[in-house]
Image 1 (tube, rainbow, N blue to C red):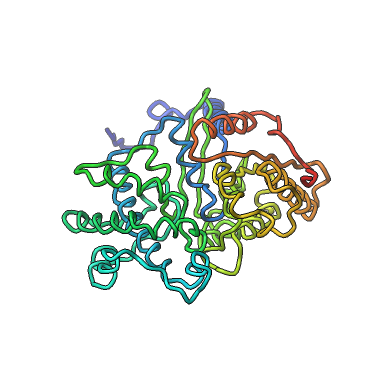
Image 2 (image 1 turned 30 degrees about the vertical axis):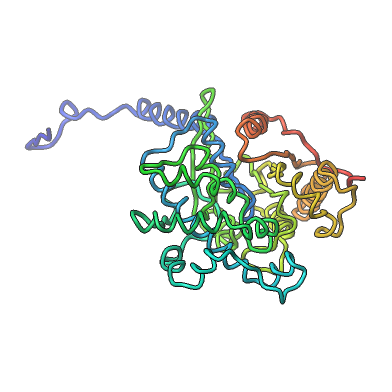
Length: 411
């Protein structure tokens, strides 16, 4: 209630607060804010597209029991449907590429042949009607419904599309195409989801936590998540890794101001992309793109106070791929016997030594900043939890995380 008084106010009506009391309240507020800040740290996840960075982000949410809302699951349901249709179109278009035909048959002039049923669909209008009626989101990663553009068929249209998807997936030619998926920009998630077609086709299907972790939709913008433990708060930030998104965090744009407060930068590197070219530039290998971006991060004055931690991801896929596609064929400065262990030691050395060179360019004394390296598989909750706990413990202490400031090249 507001009261009005006539005449001049007196000290009896409105006693002035003692300056000491006011100053004490301000001091208490400042102390409370300082205490809150002491218990909060910022971890930024960076990396190129298809590194598995956003998969790691989703796995971290999962192992910390951060639930997805019904709305989020609905959005992911639509996104996974769109992803299946998009991947099917990628397979069909890939079969028409001369480079793919040459890799499978040995001759770019020898066309690849589908079964009669699939050929009949491809010759008609049904494929474009059912699968390409709208532009589906490009292959990538996502972690928030606010940053996903779900475009997916529904109702009878989706049921009809599912029949086409299943027919193409089960065609003998598709198995051959998957062996050269690196030529088609086809992600490693496709077997998992195509293997779930019957489940996805059921009425009322909703994606599980594992489905969401494995789903690949491009991340745009900034996605944040707070994780609480032992009275402390970790604020994790994930940003898009495609070239268009990296312009926002490698230069003096809005997100970079947030990164200046980062305690740790986790840079995610895919070990399994060494034979794949960039989505945006088919003349640049993904492994080289990632290495160059890492150097830019280490040179960034805005991140000078952050610890740099490298997560070498997709260990499981690296081990499967090396036998068919030797690492030395694609990374010409590699020195080693071709084993997964040798490749890992080489990559750790390459990144660590390059990072130290970039620190020196900023004028940092040798040994002032350390780099830590970990090897993981982002879809493995147990694997990620063990690694992340080690990193997390360093955030609230002065202890460095497994420093490896200089690593010799693998034998």
